[in-house]
Length: 358
Image 1: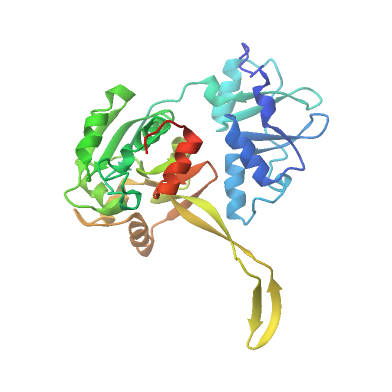
Image 2: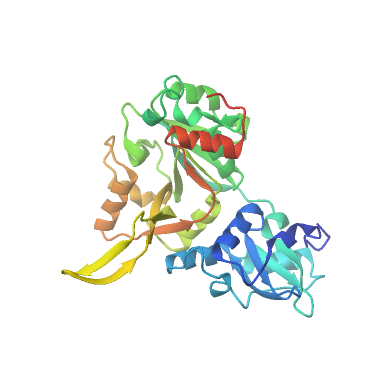
């Protein structure tokens, strides 16, 4: 890092892609780098546009798919700066424009660097709590869960639940509430008050399973700010801070993180009208959004929960929708895995690390 805050190593160059790449290529690049931006350039290194996390999400909502060219989504007139601008000036400019990345170009608009807000300032601590549902019995993961609660199953040398806490902590969240039930004492013994991880942990103890939302009704002190809710078996690189900011910016009562899921029909499909054939589709692909198990709730959402009653999160969203309250989705593309079955656990262990006991 130079005195002006420009990444002078070759790291930023990994974010430069040609204008011919697809959205799939851009997402893969974004997941492989820490910059969270794609800089689109011609063969001479001239900046043609930028593609950010938000651009991708908006494109997915508008119907773009992974094979779409990036230029159709890119911001072709991004804010840029020239080399030599002071650290303080760059920081003020990025904060005033709510930017996490800021390309640096020369007089010919050739890319020469990239400012990253995360490198210009350390993440500020967020007062919002993170509630993690860790009370499930993990029936589909037996025999792994016969003597160990699912959130404590090791992946990459540490429990799944610890991965979730560490990811949120790195985004500035330090206050956690764990909802426990099945073998909950083992979770409490492992994490304690959270001091070993540099966070604060409290517990909600379910006398009976209350679902993926019901345990929130056990909160002793009601939150005054929007709060994150996550299933305890979801491993993802989602940026919880950006999810929270997205929720607040859209003034929603509840936000659900969703993933785009593609399913290809194994057969050719015949489209008919009555007995007449009107067309054919050879093994068509269906694209839908699926629930990713991570949410943001406004404190007012708690009024739609019945105390100590079972409730799953989709049901809670339906109740709010029926009351004409705004509920929205947060399209995510980050690596994500719902560890609900043995094959999911083995995949997680293969991708994140080895050496875990079966």
